[in-house]
Image (tube, rainbow, N blue to C red; front, side, top):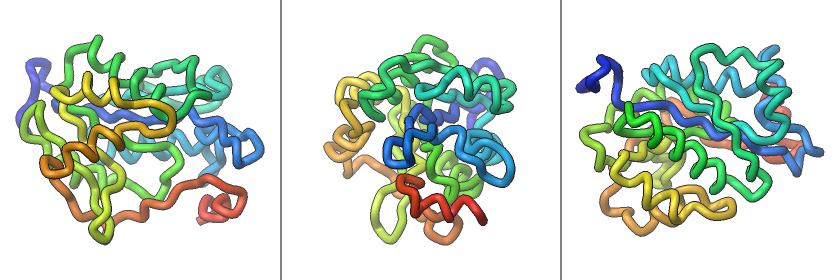
Length: 204
């Protein structure tokens, strides 16, 4: 992969970790325990081990507690005071921070509550980057999922369409023919930690 002018990968990791866990009794998802540490640390590690040298982490619910308890050295921590409005606001905050930095040409988007997605899937989708107009997505049995690679040429359009809990879904849906699908079903499981029943998946 071509490096940028700073000698670094043009693809940054973008982790949305602002959720308050409404269906989990109000437990912030970033702080859910996983293998003895906060879940957000696992998600950051997956991005880094998958090749994203710089990782942007969008925080919202219990942001101060996440900063105090989680070890996130070298990450760019982005506060989203509007996190309760849904994933769209967190995506907008993350893309705004990336745009202001102007050092990356694509964002590799993941969600904090998908621990079944690890470095292998990150690396595969990241490898699909070609230029700032690239759009790529992990594929699971023919359906799109995370990680999603968003070339910088699309950031403004994605931010404009990101409302409520939609994230990039509307924008990507309108450009389905342009998306490079990367099969990841053999290396990742795209389940979410949304309910009390889902918490059992964190025991593995």
